[in-house]
Length: 392
Image (cartoon, rainbow, N blue to C red; front, top):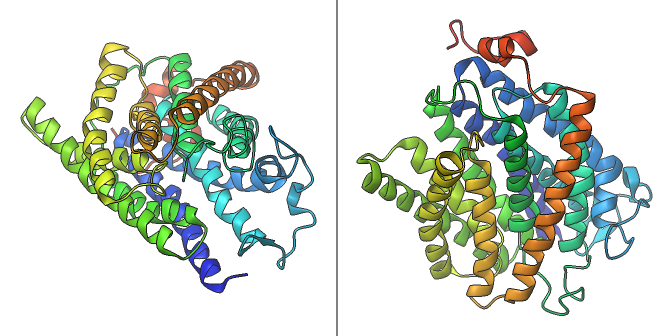
């Protein structure tokens, strides 16, 4: 065990949990109407709790067990046989488990943005749990757990390069979000502006800080690689924030706070897969493009395809993660065959599993709340609480 590595990953684990609670909850919560903000908080909090238990029971062993090329098996269910002295490289394995658990929390939590203001709470819990076990955990094994997409797999020694989750986290969550949005259909009222842009900015800032643990921690060591990953993460986020705001100013005559901080998230998502393979100049380029690319993706999904992916999960996370994954090959740090092939394989798998799960889960518990609940707001009808005295 390396003490410095262990100390850093303990901090990184806390930072990644901080991304979901409270970062993502505030970012998403500020974007919805006042009558639905608590439901968003509830979704994020409940997912964090449920994924933690399921990761212990099934997720970790499927993702990082030694079962083979396609899944890890069940030998490490409930961390059976794993003690505090067992190591994963230079880290206690229980710490590696905890660090990866925070990734298993935020990935299904990202999907929340697609279905806010109209989804059934039972559907959120049942779908998220099954999706993490049946979609997310296998993909983790394929890419990070020594599976068939990693080094020595179907792409040989040029296995897929995904440092912190462009494919594993952002592509899977983005595609799942898009599919659920299609099944749900649009909100009855989708033109209301964010009820609290201040929450959005605070949440985005927390995500930005937490992302240092997300990307820097993925080095799994306290070394120069972690320092570079942290640095390029920051550069991409800052640059994408500026280009998003500039592009808004060019198109609409005004640069908005919500737009600028959405650009931050686009830059963070885009650098995530590449953060262990590029330097500051490449990060500057990735961020500069991401701020415009993801903004245009929002326009395509929302206005051209008329899909109510409410908080633009696919346009920002999905497109950003896919773009960053491809840029690894553009900058010569990976092969195009491995990057594009893995994106395609994981994309098809995610779509199929997500569609099947939507059909199965909505047969058990309603996908969408009734019209009265949607009008009155999920907070008071579903959870019996209001965020404010006069929620609009």
